[in-house]
Length: 234
Length: 72
Image (cartoon, rainbow over all chains, first blue to last red; front, side, top):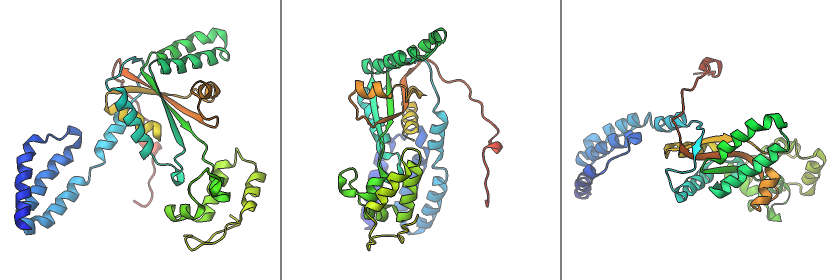
């Protein structure tokens, strides 16, 4: 064990000069030598390694917070991009995958429009607004919309109504692949919490009558997988 | 949340962006043009492209007016 650790440490030290961490990930560059110390003096430095590792990770959030701070609105924009279309799609895909959603409903949709398709979107917006905005004010509106049209692309973020009632009343209908019980197990929620979410989410768009009828349709049957006690009156 | 995630990633890649909200005015035309499901509701339009200039200074309200903590 000890000899293989030493070997690994040697190999790492050979590799190390060629690794140039990005400036925004400073913590990596300070952590690697600590790891090497651990390999060379396993028993003595183990505690120290963990203490130092903890200390160096205390500000791990700073690069992320700096990125938030650096995000700004930019206008106007050019009809070109410093990254290629594939990279743009990759960024949007990853953001879409890893942005949270209630009950992992994944109800966000994204349509990326590039170049000519992007221009089409802003032409649509111009036509739509021309019909609504008073003629004397449209000039300024058109100027602004032409500025957007002059950019490279648009990421259109869309919400697909996720029907939580499907989870409640009829999970087998194809709208949702999750049953109530799976949802309860996965998200550590009680059925009454789900009901509350449904009521909050649909209070404006759904009539009280349809909500009541969907609840009546299939009264929940208690199963062993339920986390909390079902509260049917919630 | 998706807008912020994409926007921040774009900024890190040197791509400029601004966020617009022309929905629901354009919803119907958009779903028809790109043949999208009818129940898709537009939420925001993140316009992006190469920057012409860096953003100027940004002013902030006194953070004390916006933040409270109890039990710290």
